[in-house]
Length: 128
Image 1: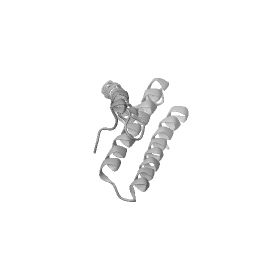
Image 2 (image 1 turned 135 degrees about the vertical axis):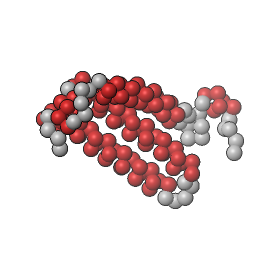
Image 3 (image 1 turned 180 degrees about the vertical axis):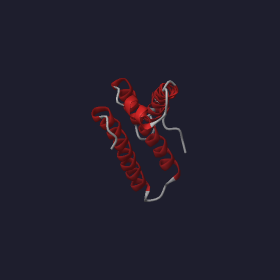
Image 4 (image 1 turned 120 degrees about the vertical axis):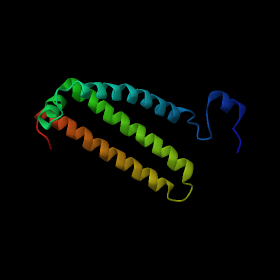
């Protein structure tokens, strides 16, 4: 396989004309995940206890719910990007598109459930 045309290599464009877009999204979400996971770990470490009531009160704060929703969204998007690369690199059969569709459905459903749970606790103070 070749590397494409000389001008394509200079511009960073591959055969699909998308270039490094996917690669940049993976790197940006990795950086965002690093910051958000550090926030999460330090926030959890500062809690006085880890019982159910304390965690419900903690998630009920908008200063916690907003970065928590961002963490969930960023982690699931990063997860989807990484697994999409694996599917595209190692699955060359006719089921390739079906696997990508299933991956998208799974990540959207899982992220939606997690975000809904966070928002429900934040707005009502009660678990689902």
